[in-house]
Image (cartoon, rainbow, N blue to C red):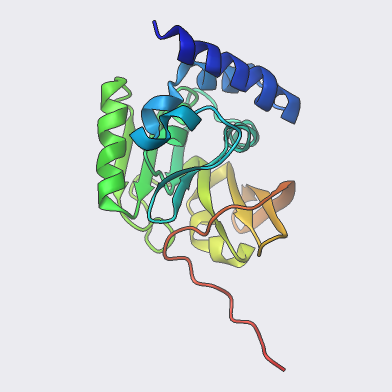
Length: 221
C-alpha cells in the first residue's frame, strides 16, 4: 500500500473536503478510495492532492478536489443510477461516480484524453465506466436518459444546457458551472418531470470553459 498517497487522500478529505460542507459518507469513501494521483499527468503528480485545479493539457484541467466533492454530493448518485460525465478528461470524476452509481458514461472531446481515461480506469478495474470520444455538449449521448450528469467545464449561460437537460431522467440531477468570470456559479438542475426543471445555485467558482462551448455575443453600444 502506498502510505504516502493514502495519507494525502486522508488529509485531502479532512482539510479540504469536510470543511467545505461535504459530509455524504459515500462521497467521502469514494474519494478516499480512488487514487487521484493516477489520474494526474506525471509532471503534476506532486500536486495531485493540492487544493488547486491541475492542468491535463490543451487548457483542460482536473477540478480541485473540494469542487469535485461538492458536485458529487449534489448529484446524490444512488447505487442503481446511470450517470454521465461531460468533459471526462483523464477519468477522475467518472472513476468517483463509478463507486457511487451502477453505470457511468464519460464523454471527452479530445481523443487522446479519452484513451488515457480508458487506460487509467481499466488499470483500476472500473469496467462499469465507459469513455466515449465525442462532444457531449453538441451530441446526444448513447445510453440516455441519465439519473446524474456532471459537467466538468463551464458554460456562459444556463440555456446552453438544454440538450443535456433533455437527457435527464425524471428526478435526474445535473451540475455545471455557469456564468462569466469572475461571477460563475455551480448550478444544480433537477428534472421534476417533462419540461419542468428546478434550478438552484450551489456555490461560486471559476472553471475553464467546456471545450467547443460558444461564447455569448455581447452587445456594443
